[in-house]
Length: 398
Image (tube, rainbow, N blue to C red; front, side, top):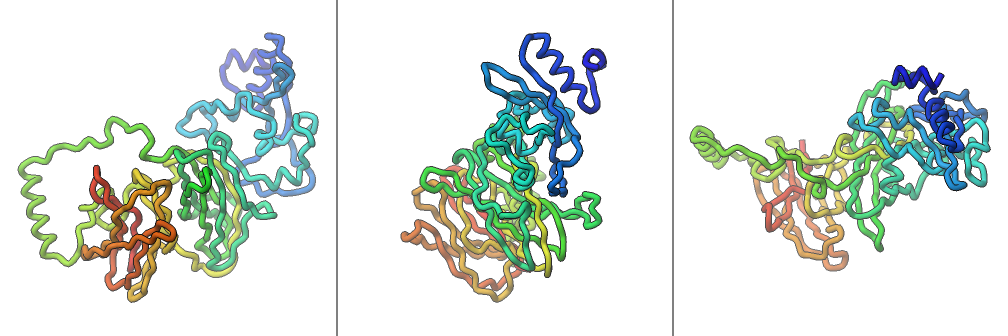
């Protein structure tokens, strides 16, 4: 009963929805509790018969317009809400947006015209509020409710987002074949942005490493790292003491005698040559989820991961595979995004050799062809006036 929920200030199941309905009734606002099916990311049912109702939300009518409220999904205790914050999007959301995840038992409670059939509902991707807040549009969805890949096949997924302040990260989350939903691997995909005719376009290269596996393609979207407000601890370093200075001097002398390059001389690069500021699943909020099925051989590429903290953006046309092979002649081709200035780009070998990129006026890109003759990390860097040389991407030859 609504009174019991109000007194306990907690509820399991539809209690919050019935309490909200009672509160609206007390205020004289037209409101209804809506029973229906709430999709989850791991749902696999695609049948012609609607599954049993598993959720209750609310509809309210203000000035003749229907809006939907889901107090359970909005609650900060909901496991899908990032950082345990209340998700305000679920208050007064539009019916056409809510239909991506909420399918009512009664078609009249969709509040859209024409009514969306169940078969179309299954074709829609699973989305989170970020999908609408960032105005994500998936432009080349397959005609089946999942992506299907074979062997080393790589398929581009094209989308656009609201504007150039946003960036995207994507990954494949592979699950236990038994159907338990247990995550057995996470594989980053290559998601890159390009400003094209006033639109912020994104291309995600999708490939799966694993023989006969199933999983989810997860797309995250949020404000680019250089545009996010800095935390108080960012950029604060302690001044080195005398012992640290001496240790650094000795280490520097050792480096000069060594054939191995000190990768840490480049900002945001660790001692293994990995870029420390690549995006992860924790960098941006989750926007949408697509099921993926892979069959055949386990030989898809390991995608290169660009530096997410660069003040400038570069689109890597090639190579997109993060693994290089000894003796292989590689063509490097990068395009600056949304910036017509000329840049100085270099490829740095594991021993510290520097190879300059050539500017290509035909597409305003930068190209370099080089034969890989060393094992280790090969890093593409570019020069900035404020921070010196910054990494764009890191490749590894093993």
